[in-house]
Amino acid sequence: MKPSTGSTPPLLSFVIGGAQKAGTSALARYLGAHPAIRLPHSKEAHVFDAPTFDDAATPRQIDARYATHFDTTDAIPAPLYGDATPIYLFHERLVQRLARYNPALRWIILLRDPVDRALSHYHMERARGAEQWPLWPALLLERWRLRGHRDDFSERSPLRHYSYRARGDYAAQLDALYRHFPAHQVLLLHNTTLRTQPDSCLAQVCAFLGIAAADDAPDFAPVFQGDYPRPGRFGPSRLLLRWLLRKQRRRLQRGYRITLDPG
Image (cartoon, rainbow, N blue to C red):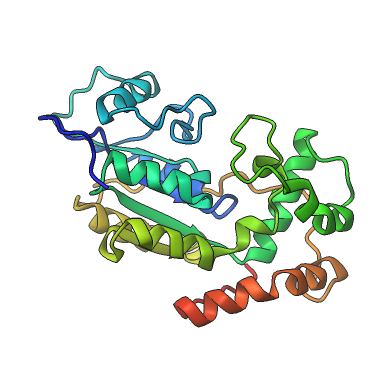
C-alpha cells in the first residue's frame, strides 16, 4: 500500500499506538518534554479512528485534520510529529489506514499484563459512568455486547468502551500490525519496564526515533494511577480474567515469546 504521491512527506513520523491502559499517557508525557518531539495538545488526536474518517483521503488531507492538534508556530526547524492514540493498534482497519498514509511510520507499542489491563479499563469506564454492570457480568457479557460493532467507531460504540478482554489479545493485534509494517519499524515495550526504569525506556524510544536523548530528564512522576481496589494475585476477579484470557496469553507466548506478568 502506497500513499498518494506528493513532494511533502506525511506530517506524522511515529505513533504511540497502544495498548490502552498500558502506560501510553505516561510515555507521551515523558516524550512530549523532549524539545524535538511534538505530540497533540490532548495526547490522543483520534484522527484515523474518527467516525468521519474518509478512506479516500490523501496524506495532505489527513495532515490538514492533524493541523489543529499541534502548535504550528515552532522554533524547531524540523520537529518529529507523533500521535498517541491507543486504539490504533486495536483494529486492523486503523493499521491499514496508517500504512496507506505513511508506510515509513514508526510504531511504539506498550504491552501490559492483559488481566491488569482489563481491570484498569473496566474501572475507568465505571468512573466515567459508561459501565453499569458489575465486573463479572461485564466480562462475561463482552462478546454479546460487541456483536455487530466490530467496525463501529462511533463515540458510544461498545467497541470503544466494553472491549476489556478483546484489547488484551495482543498476538492478534501484533499479527495485523506486522502484516502492514516491517518489524524494524515497531518498538515493543513492557509497561513494567516503563514504570520501573523510565529513564532507560525513554532513551530506548529516542534511539528508535533516531534522536538524541534530551539533556534534561523529564519528571518521571506516575501518570493516571487509577484509584480502585486491586484484587490479590489469587483473588476471584483476577483468576476469572486469567481463565477468560488464557488463550490470548498462550498465543502471545507461543507466537512472540512474550510473557506478561502482573505489575
